[in-house]
Amino acid sequence: MPTILTSDGANIHYEDTGTGRPIVLIPGWTMSTRLFDRNIPALAANHRVIAMDLRGHGQSEKVDFGHRMPRYSKDVVDLLDALELEDAILVGWSLGASVLMSYHGLFGAHRATGFAFIDQTPKNSNRDGWELGVPGVTAETSTDVSMILENRAGLVDAFVPKMFHATPGDADIAWMKDEAYKCPDETAATLMLNHRAQDWRDNIARFNSPLLVMAGRQSAICPYDSSVWIADNAPDAELVTFENCGHCPFWEDADKFNTTLAAFADRVAGANSGA
Image (cartoon, rainbow, N blue to C red; front, side, top):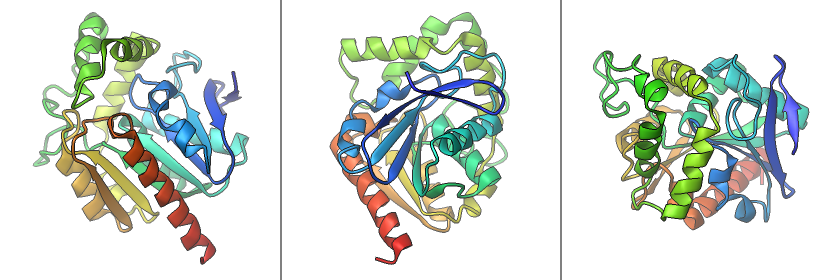
């Protein structure tokens, strides 16, 4: 099982498949690299695909420290540095996209030539005139993580099917729930508090790297219009809509997702090489 050691001493698990321009896949809250099972083989046909488990998630070490956006973004830096990657396409799903918003704000385009966000609002909490946050998350509810700490099973039972427009079969839902449970309750709660507190809108306005925004029109987790907002406000962004998908277009419409992401990676590569 390949791992790298972060600068603060956490072991991060990653998968490394294929050769060519690197594409780095970063999962969302409590999820793991397994969610990209429908994408890695296809993308690896012409690219080097690295998928990482966030600290405390999947097969990464279950440390009890560092569960905040800036540290998670530094973990991505540590991975790219350890693997000596250059001109990577960094792809974040859900909270993974927030990690990349932090990454770009702190480290710019370090070892990256392009970014892709999958279904993530730049501000989770609906407050101060912002209405494109996660449904139900307000100033009053943003600090309430009691469901995570007191009824994790109920939360997971509700959350995993909600990620999809068309719910997968029972077997797929079962293993996805198992992946969620690999992230300890305290880690999940601490991270969610930090995630909800962020407002990346000023970062988006200064996001001067090529950016692909991929959004499920039917997402019940992040409003579709929040992805539209990112694409409209980032200087060099394009929006691709997955009409019949929810929060996981890479799963529900894997063929379109894989083709779209590979084409973006190749287009960015061509632009940088002057081709």
